[in-house]
Image 1 (cartoon, helix red, strand yellow):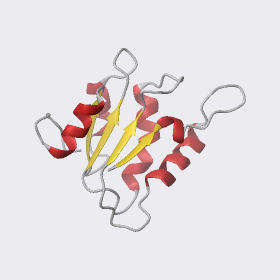
Image 2: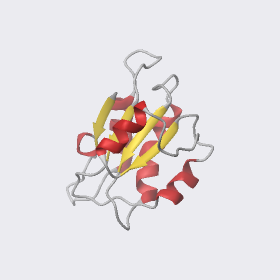
Image 3: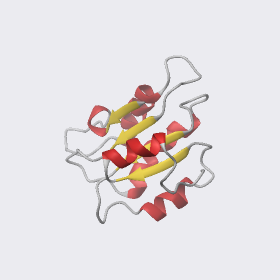
Length: 126
């Protein structure tokens, strides 16, 4: 499993705003397998950042990962902060048809890790 924290790739401009283009490039570089096909799953942790990202911003950041050929095995988990900024149903709707990777969203690290190993949690194949 490859765990990537948002603080490892979010690029922030001098004015304190996120540079989404550079952040997407950094995330893609971090997530891309050194040699395909990848033999790991990916967990993206969006919880511990000082920037509160919207559902659309999170989707925009991860969308390039769906196009990496031979990437990952078959699951990607997102850890997000619970609350008003992330709408799980809307996120799932945006992901439909974007990839063959199953994307699970969680607010708890343990649930995300468990999901990788046991299919107890309801997931949708994207």
